[in-house]
Amino acid sequence: MDDLVSRESVKLGDSWAEGLRLAFPVMLGYIPVGFAFGVLAQKFGLSPLNALLMSLLVYAGSSQYIAIGLLAASAPWLSVVFTTFVVNLRMMLMSAALSPFLRAWSKPELALFAQQLTDETFAVHATQFAAAPPEKRTVFIINMGAQASWVLGTWLGLLGGQLVPNVEQFGLDYALPALFIALLLMQIKNRVQVAVAIATGLLSVGLLLLGMDQWNVIVAALIGATAGVVMESWTKK
Amino acid sequence: MDQKIVLFTILGMTVVTYLPRVLPVWLLSSRSLPPVVVAWLRHVPVAVLAAMLLPSLVAQEGQLALNVDNLFLWAALPTFLVAWKSNGIFAPVLVGMALMAAARYFLGM
Image (cartoon, rainbow over all chains, first blue to last red; front, side, top):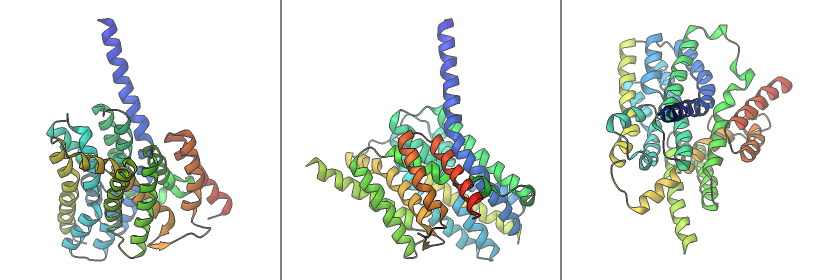
């Protein structure tokens, strides 16, 4: 009995430690980027409450930056909502890609999980799920930590951008790109995936340079994943 | 800026962001998918990550930026190596940040 209890508590401790370990780099990146959003939101004329609500409810960095820019330029609300829709459509791919790993989850758990899905948490989960079945507690610790740090960052930015030193000085703006590099490499296990990564990356850059600055990620990813399946069928023959 | 309109906009943004987040996992997780779809979904993480990462390194404001002062690009090379060797997330994140901080400090960029 004692043994059982202690083993269970070790496991509990493990999932906390694992969650925090994986959440940490994301949080390190979210606080300064959220901070910059808070500073800008206030400068552009959003009320502090609305800025915080946007970070909590929308919780999607690049679309939030675009939205406050459009709002400041007096764009009609419907066009802001539509632009957000287009920019965040890539979430469909991420949500779909994680779905085979979440078969055992209840609908309420999936509903909460989805609200906290971001580029970065997706990248972490996709890497983890490929290695081992998802541990619910670990997953939610990562998600809660990430969202809390995004909202906290926003709040700190609202409190006073001038009071805090420039985050770039500490290289904090590089936490998320570096995390992406690491997670992409961890995902790549074979030659087909190397080809998919290079081709999709280049295609995404190409589309961006052609002016498809809101569609490039989803269009490139759709084509890249399809090319991956096709290449796989070649190598199997 | 009318904060009521802003709030309205935020609620609209919340809906159009939540739907693509929730619908696929909600609808697909309880279904068994054809093997070709499963194979396709397995390629999505690499494809999406690459599609987001590369533009952030080689482009600035929609223009190709392979110039020497694009620190995001040049710091990516050692970060990539560290990620490759360590096969973890901590070392590359810390090395990447340290490189950025050092480059800005010493090069005054």
